[in-house]
Length: 108
Image 1 (cartoon, rainbow, N blue to C red):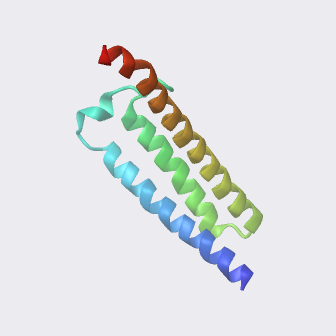
Image 2: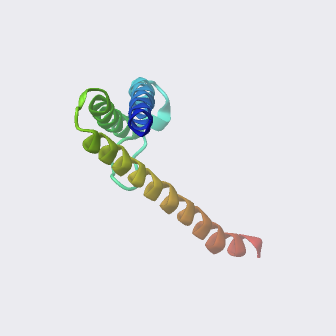
């Protein structure tokens, strides 16, 4: 039962990663002006960032589908989730710090 649950988790992670990678790749070829803006951290266009992240997600999805090493599959998905959690938490902190710093100045 445990082995089957882990296998289902890995396959579903691979499917979701492939879907989000496809969405990133499709949107990177769009004509929206936001694609030309630079990412504040890496100083590359959002369009290029979406292409890079889409390729990384495709690679991880391929590992989830075709690798025989279950530890590798779980480890790389866990690593991706940790990076995403760190990204969200730092974004949350910076948003709340901006509110703390700028709202009192704006309210006066």
